[in-house]
Image (cartoon, rainbow over all chains, first blue to last red; front, side):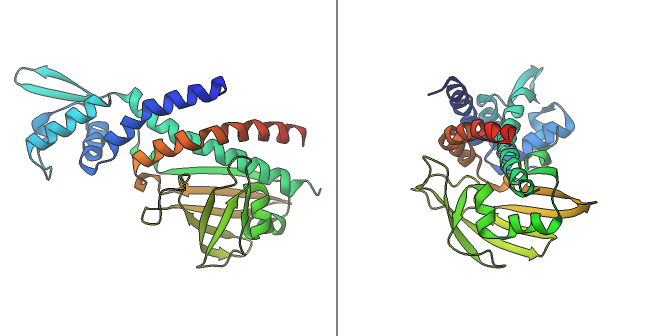
Length: 116
Length: 153
């Protein structure tokens, strides 16, 4: 295995739990709220949610295990915030497909221009 | 940070070829396969699915299916497919697809091509990571080949 490939496999293995953590509608909604509203307490995050506060707490802990969010205690409240670096990893996976398109479009360009 | 940005990929390129030539390279299944590295069972027909075999060395056992969504001659071509369907032991038919769109516009004697692949947010995240693990070796090698091919062309 080439060194580059080894590096890729390592980064993907690292990304797998991240995708699993994001693969849930409630957790995605929580991440979206933390994205747009900034750090929020457990009770704020539970307001308006379709599931109980206990369920939200469990989802937040799953996200924390994947390194997507971090919590801090403020008095009796737990405040949650995003770890943007981990989300960037998900973004990079999409960039990889973009690279595949770049390669395919490069071949298309060579193909249609070669007759000139 | 936008969550929407994970849903689509958009690429634009200026091709030094007339629109009719670019159109043929995209809408003709055989020509499409030449640069996309797939060999298709039949022509691209609106509303129909067409199966193709991957031509990349080491991946010839893999097949993929394109569902041709729309053909507007010399302007627009779109299909749906399973972007991570790399494991022959998994039935992907029940899973969501992404939409791939090609738009062609004139730019003098050249053609501006825009390619958009969208719908990634609907794809199960676990599938993405798994598929990347499986196919990245192929793509890494492919990228190296292309780099050599394009720079000598």
